[in-house]
Length: 306
Image (cartoon, rainbow, N blue to C red; front, side, top):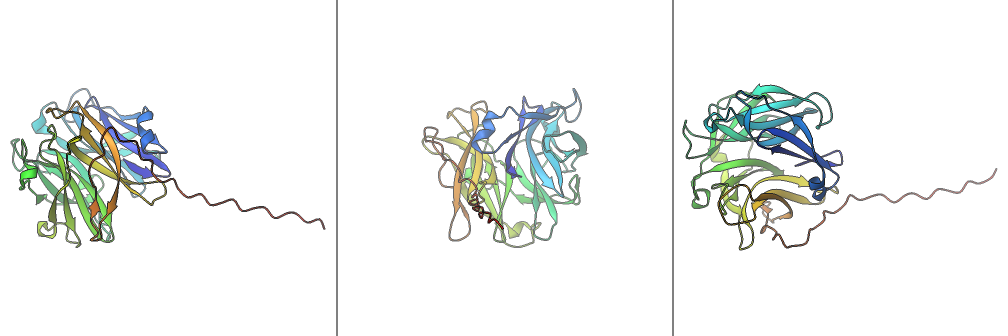
């Protein structure tokens, strides 16, 4: 989910094939919008099936959607990019092509640093076989082209990243006061132990793995909420609040069919790190974001007859 021009836009995959975008003036209203289908895959081919985790990005005044897809075989999953042909993010898109990630890749996102340089971050296999997912980063030549070799950012080295399978995926960028955070999902997504970890960097040396420090888990299951992961971040319309959008499971049983989407306001610690707290129980009442401030109308001065 992103906020642009007074609207929230939510990009999603349906039936693991079609890409839709919903729009709303509120975070909670996204669920009431039926959405617009902006891309339909070909009937067959390298990006015809298993369309996963599309992300909407505004880069240099143009809209792009990054998504993972394959030909029906998971080992052929790669990252792809669409470019919108008009100014409306719900408009017509054309396929720009596949991003060169040197192997299996899903969950791609874009990091732009203060210098204006951009980098692509994604989850990939270290080799040709399933069994482990790392996070990788590479410079971007332009919004549709990787400009250098992939660099290993982090591996699932901690116990909380290795439940059922060692996995780091779903990277999302969060920036504040010169600090760069990559918040990512860890462990197997089909389990109740799916959670969020965090990488921190306060340098401009983003291609150096040693410049990133791992923390976690920073957001995890409770006795009432399970399988929290794959987040995004948005501001309230007033710009006064930070919100995390994430999915969770409605049961402890392994699987993906019971996942749904939630939103929660979060704060910042005195050390400058995000404080996500605990996921909100499903029975909790909805919390409404602070609306934008509206300047009071200036009273008209009475007209004085000449």
